[in-house]
Image 1: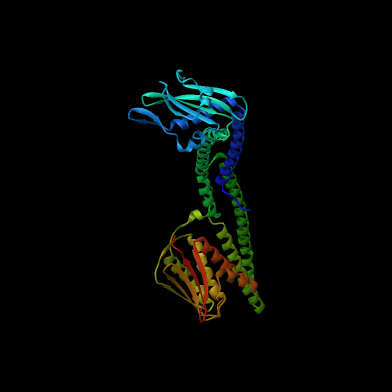
Image 2 (image 1 turned 90 degrees about the vertical axis):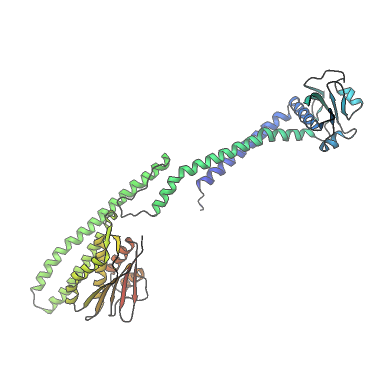
Length: 442
């Protein structure tokens, strides 16, 4: 289902109800004017006399008249049913389109004209009426008189349309545009903080205790929703912290009895005891990784700080070298270009340690492990069989799991890389494998 913007919904509904209101008002205006013959007659006389007055002009100091072309078919033909006479207040006739009709329907020429007059000849429809209106033109006054007999050209509909346009459509149209504009502007202004909160929600970090939706400037109803979401987010965060704490506590509790068991096995002089001791070492390593994973999930991103990668890797390799040599491997370090990143130092150290441990654990004795720091990357390479291939890191973890391995170490590295805006790459080379953390500049 397509989700429409709030502005479109509001605008469409305002337009719909405005249209309904305009239709209802149109029916009321039409009924009010159409059934009121007196008002309709007055409007017809006003409109026709105004249009005839447009033909007045001044030449040689005298007022003259020329019938407008738009009215020639109505007042320029005999027996058209429409008659007109224009005269000055002094009695000088400027235009005449009737004979006996003028005498029958219009005021006497020597009669001092009023500003407006109207007489209904026959009541009802079609309209049959006579009337006139006085216009001031230059220094004189001109009386424009018209007579409509049965309205054969149905001028009344033009009058009705003109009234509807002037008194309803134009004002309602202006009001509709202003209301729509003000409403859309208000909606857009009110939703600006909501839109900012939506963008913030997309980039929200569930592991950062400071993460929340900012309700500043939001409408009250939407701010309550955002506060409810913040409350739900806090409750989910508390639940996750409790689960992480439980996982970490279990891992720590298991390590102590494992250490005791290993001490007891060391006192037994038997090949099967050595085999059990090796298996126990693998179990201890698994518990250590589980602890590291729990620590990774419980980390607060507020503890990010600037870390010197070259110094960090150098200290790590120095501390791990005895462990690597003890297992029949060799390790070297090459810091080509030191650089700094914004990271959690303990997690970054765990990531590199896991890469070195994986290189040791998945290669035969005598394998040389090379750790290097270059421009924006950390590489751990070996010349053994390795576990790599032309495979993305996330797919490689799945491959190891399907083959019987747990892949927890690589999963830890992948999560740490993602947390630090870095890319985790594993590629096969001849011979061996290269694992690389590539940091993207923030």
